[in-house]
Image (cartoon, rainbow, N blue to C red; front, side, top):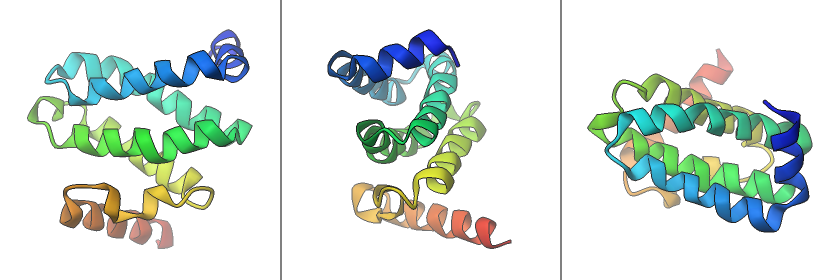
Length: 128
């Protein structure tokens, strides 16, 4: 993760947060290569939100990014990168689940049974 990028995101949130929201659209594309490219950036955003404890970034990652990644898992074109997407969800759930309620709320997701199963697996893994 680059210090310059991190500084920019934190100092210019009026510009950065709308730009980050545009990244969420990539998970709706049927272009697995684009999702592959954005997944490492999204993983860095999880780490940045955890380390800085920046309220708006935590909100973005916990609610918006988490929802988009789950929706991205629904697309067959993302099958190749699904392990990375599941890892991003796991990181959000583990590192931010106690700071923001969104990762634990099933009401945000259209596939409630799939999401509930994911939550069960994540909680089971944490207990093991």
